[in-house]
Length: 103
Image 1 (spheres, rainbow, N blue to C red):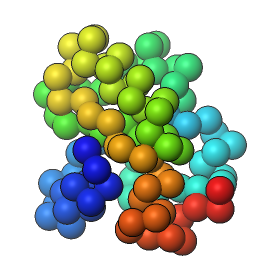
Image 2: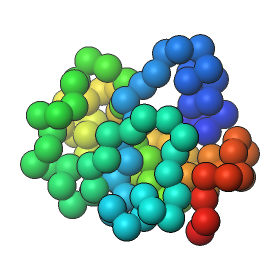
Image 3: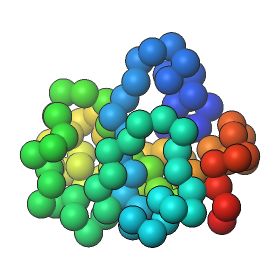
Image 4: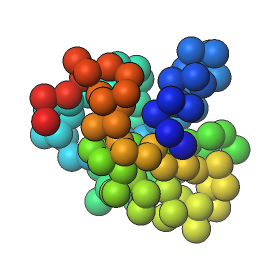
């Protein structure tokens, strides 16, 4: 999913569950301006019960690489609506809201 597609969903009120897989210290550097569920990549496997399998999930990170792995992991674990946010928070900052990041 692109950041433009996510912005359109958010603006329409169709809010997916956004899972930020970055580490806690990274949230201090940059945060999305909407609610996210923070589950660091290393904790994802043991926190699967927090995620519904029947709702859209968008995995996000700094650049889209970790979250791509997270989205594939979720799909393999039976979360067919899991997607990756292409470009991560860096893309969100570049295309949507430059105030969100200090990277």
